[in-house]
Length: 296
Image 1 (cartoon, one colour):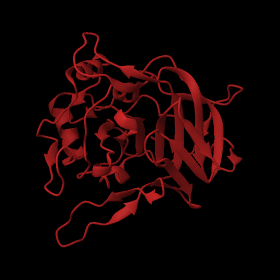
Image 2 (cartoon, one colour):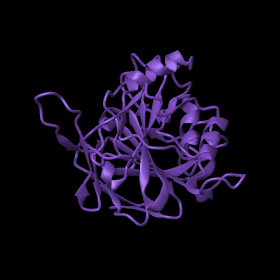
Image 3 (cartoon, helix red, strand yellow):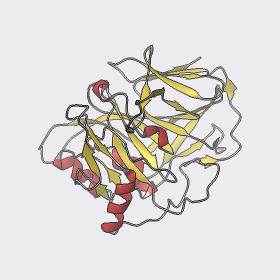
Image 4 (spheres, one colour):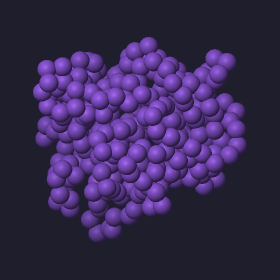
């Protein structure tokens, strides 16, 4: 990820699918992730994939099921993927990318009593690492960083508010506070919830990030080749498209490209110059190119 201090990163990334239904909010543990993906599911809703490299969370969730886009986002990281299940044909798609899959196996996840199913499955990345060891999954770090990190490419001013209209739901809004971007669903702050500790009250804090990367990708309907199960929205993350990097109230406009899911997203300016992303916490929105992202 974009960690300034790279000491202690000589181990695998763990990827965890996280629910973003309104009944799943506020989520827990995502604030400890090194990076976050956001991607479309059914009904205009989104879900997250939390990525843990140097960090861990022992109270993370709610965890939800997999979708066909998921393996295309974690394959190049060589990351085991923790989900709560999926349609059988979707599982086949994930395994077809040779992604190591951690399902709701009882060793890495647990149910909490304060919420109702299906929004009550939580997990521990510490246990996920132990389960990955038991299964003999490689414990190697990614062979390359997600992006080129360092002194960032100079951006243009006028990006203190970023709006992503995922369709059929309140617009996701990120506001630059002078130190970080904070997240809103419409006008409502989107918070995370601290883990329960005996004798202490759980505390809600607004979701934030240092850098927001928006990768526009075509949306399509994915389905089983045999006709089993139901079709689901998916995003084509191989090819090229528009990309935006927002940091410190600035925006860098460019493009992304890659030839396979086994490669990272290469970000570049119009003239082909690579875009350098600042180190720190990063939120990557895999955003439907048919929808609208605006900033001011």
